Length: 306
Image (cartoon, rainbow, N blue to C red; front, side):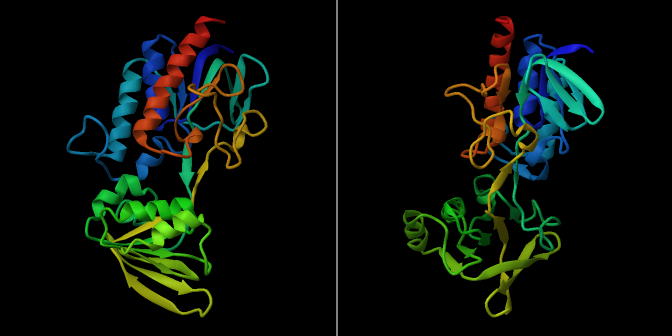
């Protein structure tokens, strides 16, 4: 079995950028795309904040460009997903079902997945008014009414951000109180554009080509009301795709990979991390791409010194 210099686990902005830089460093990288090649941007319509695209670019088109660029410089890409890893000794072992690969270094770029409600209309209207990223899509809802689901700090932060554009943000809270910190609650409740519906759960998103309304259940009275809206944002958290690394790579309490300060190095020498899998804060395509560049540069230095 040949031992690769570097294997990149995961695609998206982080994985593809790591491939571009590793290829240009003549490391002959192998990239395993994962179950959802291209990551979360494959579910996004227009990306307006990607540098160099003043007219915006569709999420899937941007991922196709990055994949093409990575291939152009020599990245080998396998459309498969990793089922098991063994980082106990080097070369490291990466398994895809019955197939096994070895590598002197690894870049983990498996990303994170937004938590969804899995209600009727949610999947069908993704990118058509349904979103899980206020900073990505808030701009498209100028002077529009938005319904947002969530009661934690991140949800209220998203709601406050959305008021920069929206005319109204209705926050659905499953309980009769918020989980968010008192300071964040005060900020949200002081914002005249934000209102709350307590003991409320979204049951269905109504619309065909775009969001028209949300059917909302009061879990105390069982009453269902229809609230007209132009957008529906889910802010109940993200889950990093790190299950296969448990017990080997250090993680925080939410499962995000830890790395050394000012570095992409993990707790295992030779294993690096890039993108949303280790970023619970920014979760932007451009920051993911930047960390993919950093990881590839660190891999190059690591390999030069072993």
